[in-house]
Amino acid sequence: MIKRLVFATNNAHKLNEISSILGDKIELLSLKDINCDVDIPETAETLEGNAILKAEYINENYSIDCFADDTGLEVEALNGAPGVYSARYAGGDGHDSLANMQKLLHNLYGKENRKAQFRTVICLIINGKEHIFEGIAKGSISKEKKGEGGFGYDPIFIPEGYDKSFAELGTDIKNKISHRAKAVEKLIHFLKTYK
Image 1 (tube, one colour):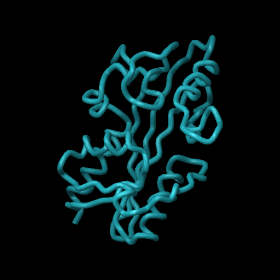
Image 2 (cartoon, rainbow, N blue to C red):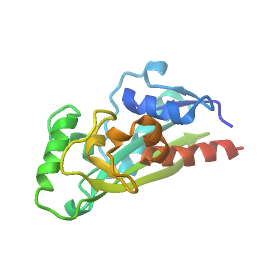
Image 3 (cartoon, rainbow, N blue to C red):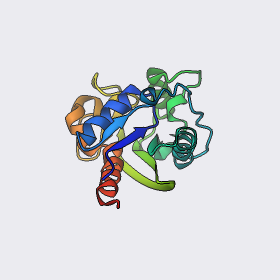
Image 4 (cartoon, rainbow, N blue to C red):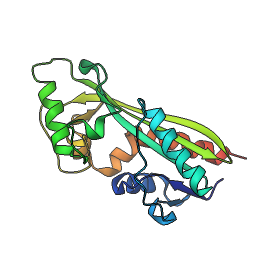
């Protein structure tokens, strides 16, 4: 099994979340750990495309095994939006979670269908070969924010089988049932069996 991997992200929340899912199985390095301070552009039209762009950038420039992910919230009544634009849904330069949530709740106002899913795509590049893993968490969008935990859209996403938002459930539960957890599980399974 691979012992050391770079996770192509500058997002501390994502890094902590994946570190806690991986445990001590793999030494996870961040972009900071390899002295990469470039904000790798996410210019693809799909989650898969963005994950591949980021992983290829690191692999080509640092010659190191790595993986990158991209995640989107896909809302059925909004034809899959915000999707690949989830982090910048409300516009502007930064990742303004509050503005993104407010825009989403506004766009869903009066709609009965609140079905949604979080989808994470991971691109792993190992020994020059690309491997794609996907994780999906189905659920629905609440009518208001609930809970203080988590990040992004967590306060308004209620996963299937629960009556609390990701933000209310806490990291222990979220890290077992989330889209990212499911994608990382597939990644770990692959790495364990990788020759």
